[in-house]
Amino acid sequence: MAKKRANGEGNIRKRSDGRWEGRYTAGYHPETGKRIIKNVLGKTQAECKAKLSAAMEATRGIDVSRADEYTVATWLRSWYDIYAKPNIRVATADRYHLMVEQYTIPRIGNIKLTKLTSRDLQKLYKDLMENGRIDRKSGHGNPGLSSTTVRSLHLMLHSAFERAVKERLILRNPTEDCIAPKVQKIEMQILPPEHIKDYLEAADRRGLLPMFYLELVTGLRKGEITALLWSDLDIQNKTISVSKQYVKNPNGELTLSRPKTETSVRKVSIPQDAVDLLIAEHGKHPENPYMFPSPVTGEMYYPDSVVNLHKKILKDAGLPHI
Image (cartoon, rainbow, N blue to C red):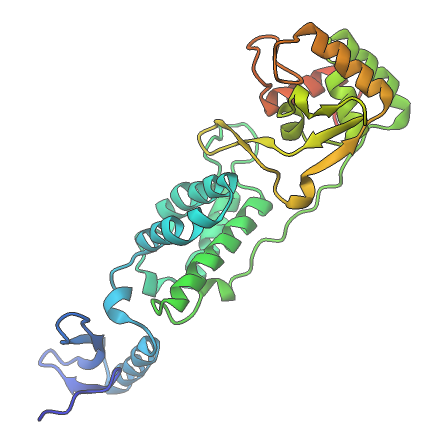
């Protein structure tokens, strides 16, 4: 009975064209049991031997019959559908989908999963930092993604390729040898106490005092402010319940979701004058469930619209942008 070659066993021969060829057993087909034969070529016997040794080492522990089926694109989509999407928040899933489909696959999706290197990923990060923005307009702002976004992409890819290692599709996670972008910390700017009076007076002139006063005394995020319902206000105990926020998905649509962490689901105490302002605000639209409905649509404000209103208030008050 013929001896079955061990996985990774190989031999070298000289071809008729003068080159040296190394052939080795990369694995066995799961259905037929037939050997999966791979080869390497070299100009000299020594070169071929070195390539053969490296190739055999690379296949040890890998399920070659499955690994060969995947490109970076097919693996990331499979990982996203099976492992990521069912186990993460909707907003996070939307962000992952954007990073997979818009940032990664168009650039490195055609590379075979087993051939992907840390150098490929490092070049990807560099390209995204320089030219990664999807919605950029010619001549307007930085066309690259922020270091925070690219670092988030790196962490997502690390998780995806770590799964590939566990499934014996690749021997080593290529993100391990990458240098992830350092997040550039931006110092938070706050409204100086001496400017608060001018700011609130400008907000009042625009009919927006309740919203922006509440933001000042609570520190709520724009997405949390816009998602507030009248029922979130406890008048007797003078608290606001924060249990949801509006976030934007990759299509630019607003999605209602829970805050990022459980500690962000909270009750926030507010002063009596804030309660009085909110009661007066609700009296303007008593049938509307939103605490701060848009006067144009009657629906909740778009968080970006609140940012723009904030900028207008600062300008009205003669204050610098913060």
